[in-house]
Length: 62
Image 1: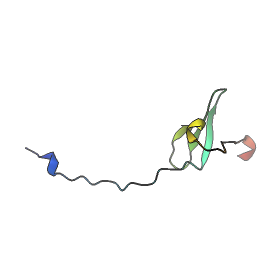
Image 2: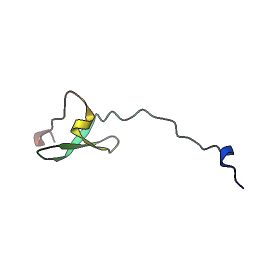
Image 3: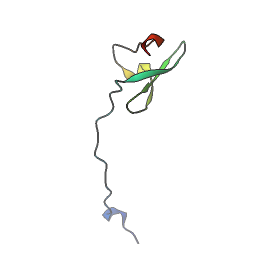
Image 4: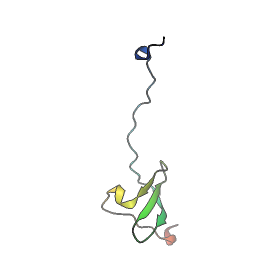
């Protein structure tokens, strides 16, 4: 029988979490705004980011 306690798994080195600095607006309604991180691909609600500066993008910035 295979003893799983003796097997060593290769663990990926831990990397720092993405700071989500490069983002683009993907959806917006009256209650929420959602952005996509251009570095890691995560979709986040703007309220989840917790940054004081907020997110402000218009079509003129494109």
